[in-house]
Length: 156
Ligand SMILES: [Zn+2]
Image (tube, rainbow, N blue to C red; front, side):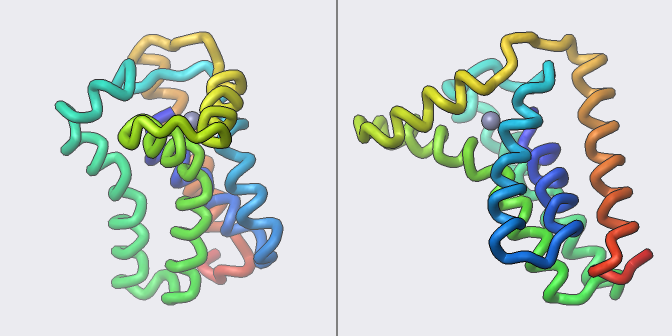
């Protein structure tokens, strides 16, 4: 899954709970759930990040930028903006930890364990670009829908 899909799904999870305990746990768990779905990614491996940095950056920041627009337009208050983005943060954290291990070339045993856990939980099935984009657009639409109907945000 691309980062924005993970991030927006994490925002959707956060939109459904006020609990400071449940939210991080469920957002984090959502990462592994989405990784199990056969999907498509615009990069094949971490080595390509260096040459596609602008793409990764855009992918990473677009949900935050869009949610800031929602705040600017008065659709959500600051507390909600922060809460949703925190959910997004937890939802991409596993990829962040994997990336950390990659750039630091760390031999840390916990990082290695986490890296293996992440890989083991990841689907081995790659979708082609066409179906890959359709499924992720669907997940993003579903997530935005969940955010809009969330009662604790009061947008619906
Ligand atoms: Zn992942």
